[in-house]
Image 1 (cartoon, rainbow, N blue to C red):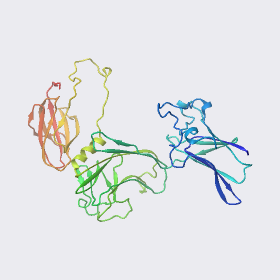
Image 2: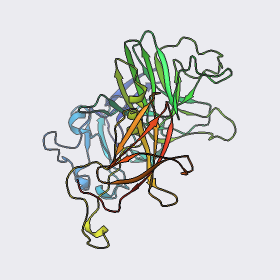
Image 3: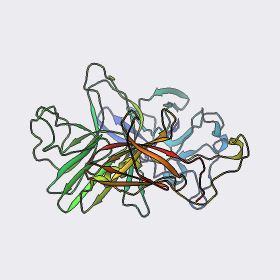
Length: 425
């Protein structure tokens, strides 16, 4: 047996030592642990697969892993996670992983050590390597990698949520970053929502308008006579359609492939723009499909995903006095809108404190009558208002209900004044 070598490392997903024979100009691996695939799935997870309990106590130095080349196996003896010295739960200490291996004789030529790391913390660790008592520190630069795509499926709702997480190195060279969503439609037509309506980029854009990238309010859709698919880009409003930005400035939209690109980053502009973008980012996308293109339903889905209901827990400590409460524990609705193509976007106290203001928007391009019912709040008076909350026209009121007409893509402002009492459901 030749010389025994000892290497101590901090945090990695794969490591290989290679011997380079300078005389023959050839190289061959001495040993390798893991694969350079940006994954640690082949290693010991550090927890029992049945109970989920930890199988290693990182606070105990005697349990620091020792891997013997030729005797140990990655799935058993090499752990997928390696705490840093700033980890309080692991004892605020270094956690060296030791590799023992033999060489057939005294080392000759050149040896290289390649280490692949996955960093799951905003603070980038310093990699320390000790080889037979000689120590070195290596300062890592994180690069953009794809760290996961959790996919969320929903009961009784036809939608899928993709959660894309990336860690990106900040660079100052010109760059652009996209997520691509290719769709299997052979006669694609495109549409995307704007503030009050939606746009068909083939026929709705004015001469001279940009046709390479677009700003989306809540959704972008690709459809044909028998099929429609749509994406709600929750965190990234810029998109391109059919292709990435190439600086061609087309004068016509033309025929394009059925691919939606989410345009998440770029640094093309030289002024009034960040020179580089880096860090940890999360981009969420909600996908749905159907037999027909239904912009009203897509707008409702978009509002639900981008402005979901928020819940808060109120305890008795939050109440100044223990007064009789008008609401019991029965399930009920504060407000009901009977039209599926009308979205309530605001319900607030009026600026002049006379009642409350409801602001609604028609999202499907349809004309109709909207009925609003407040089961808990008897309505006394109601008016159509302008955007400044100035009363324009009184509305007919019946008990808990008020009705009014709505036109395609109209934004409607309604003032409602209620009775003093609140009826329990």
